[in-house]
Image (cartoon, rainbow, N blue to C red; front, side):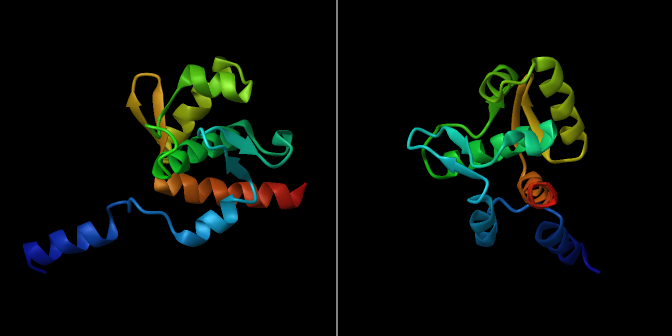
Length: 134
């Protein structure tokens, strides 16, 4: 394999795509809605899913609100996540770190996080499963 072919293959197959599959929007709309000012509304009893997935679903909503032009940034501060979800920072911080280690979240700056495309896909899959189980 030539170096050019190797570079092309890496770019095509290993770099995370920026766009989200359109079918994902159809699936996530059963879980959340966005207000015109970019707030995330949950459409289910939040106690039915894990705190880690609740945090990721919130970050997914932030990413979608940003893509839609409703808010300036897809990232969220630890304080914001804690406040919006009503979870203690002592719960949110370790969950974010676990998800960062799994590649579902990136730390933009200290205390500021953003979900990855893989994170959105994974959380939608898990939440669908959790909501149908209970």
